[in-house]
Length: 252
Image (cartoon, rainbow, N blue to C red; front, top):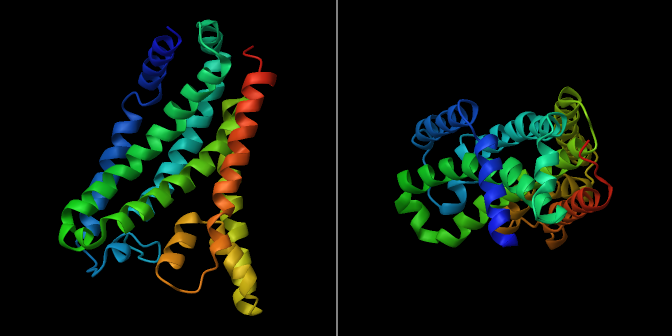
């Protein structure tokens, strides 16, 4: 019974989360972008086709689109369903608070990001099939690294939005966190490069899981510890989000 009620809640909230026209327009944009960019730069390996160092990589560009969508739409929607009283209805369902928190995470962060990153990934895989087919596991692993990076951002957005009561403030906080995180990573890379401090460069790479995994797989001397920073941040943020939603959140 609880599982069925949870799936019902998932269906109801998913319809609200990806209702047209915003989400389908974004999907169309990333699809057209992926189709155009994939044929513009020749690649010879599966990892190069989805490399963050490839400036025309559609999945890399779509990461920015997916994160901004989640930051602007997902974070504000969470505040809106609280202000409109919808959250009280969700909480009245015969399901646990953890289930409600899971539904909101899946509908507002996981599925939108997976679709916005998945469509370009599929298009690249089809158009460059002869190249991608040479090493499908590497291609999928690198695609998953972009998804994990987006989920780390999304977890931060949800945590902040769950504690705010203004959709505008939630959007500003989410976007500020994203660009602040990118700015910090860039600053570490610049300082590390100028002062020849390799550990700062590695730390900068570690802040982008897609970079860390690519450099590690391609044998560019990236230490293994760089692969654990983003997953660790993601786990901490998700734990904080669920803890707050289960124990401290008030739907009014």
